[in-house]
Length: 389
Image (cartoon, rainbow, N blue to C red; front, side, top):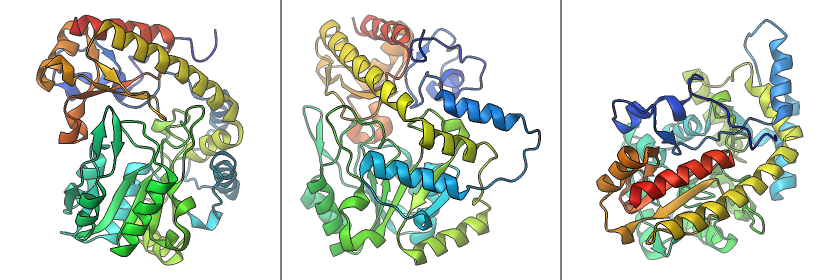
C-alpha cells in the first residue's frame, strides 16, 4: 500500500484537525464526526523528510538552531525550477509560519488606525490579524459567477485610495483560483499608483494542478518589486504545518532591515531545531512525492465533484486550479448556513468549514478538504450526501 492509500489514526496525536472539533464547532462530543475542514493533509510527509528528522533525533541535544545557507539555496533552487522565479538568498527572512510573518509585516509597515485592504471571500487571518493589531480593514468583495472569482477593479481602486497595505492570496484560498499574469500586473500597477504595499501569501503555490501555472507576484512586478512582500513555506506543500517554518521574500534591503529589527525586538527570528532539517530535505528531495500527491489530488477532485453534484442535486463545485480544497456552492438548496452546518454535523457526522468564516461573501458556500486517503474521501462524501438527502 502506498503512502497516499494508507489510513493513519490521528486521534491521539494532538492534531487540531482531529482533536479540536468540540471547541471549533461548539459541540459536546465529536468522536463520531469525520473532519474534512482545516487545511492539513491526512497523508504522511515525504519519506526523505521523515528520514532526515529521524537522523536528527539520533543527536540527543536540541539547542538553538538556524537556517543554513544550504537551506536558503534549496529554497531558491525550488522556486526557480517550479515557478521560474529567480530569488536571491539575501532576500530571504525566516519566521515561524506565514501567519506570524504576515503579522510582523503588518506591524512594521502600517500604524495603528491604518487601512489594510483584503478581497473576500478569503483566508480569515487576512482580516483578523490586522483587526487584532488595531488596523482598519477595507473589504473589496470579489465578484463571483458560477464559482469563478474576479477582482471588482473600480471598487478595488477606490479602496486603494485609503489603504496602506493590500494582502493578496495567490493562489486564492478558499476557491483555488490562480490569478492570471494580466490580473497581477494590473494589481501591481494600481497599488503603485496609490503607493500601497503588497503582501502576497503564496503558501499554496506548489499545489498546482496539471495544465495550470502559478504566477508569482514578484515575477510580474518589474520596477515595483520593492513594494512586495512574498510569504512562502514548504509546510502546506509537504504537510509539515506542525514544523512551523516560513520565509518572507523581499528585494528591498531597507525593508529587510526593518523586519529583522522587529524580529529581534520580539524574539521571533529563530526556528525550532527540526525546521531547518525538514526544510532542506523537502526542497531538495520532496519533488517526486509532490508530483505523486498532485496525481492523487487530481483523481480525488474528479471523483468528489462528480459524486457530490450527482448525489446532491443543487450542489455546484468549480474544480479548483490549485490546492486540495473544494469550495462548494449550496445556495440552490435553499438552506441557511446554520441549517447546512446542522445537517452536516448532526445528521451526516462530517465537519466542513462554513463559508462565512471567509467573510460575508462566503455565505452559501462550504470548504471541504479532500487531501485524505480514497477510503476516507468516499466515507466523507457518503456522509455529506446523507446530510443533505
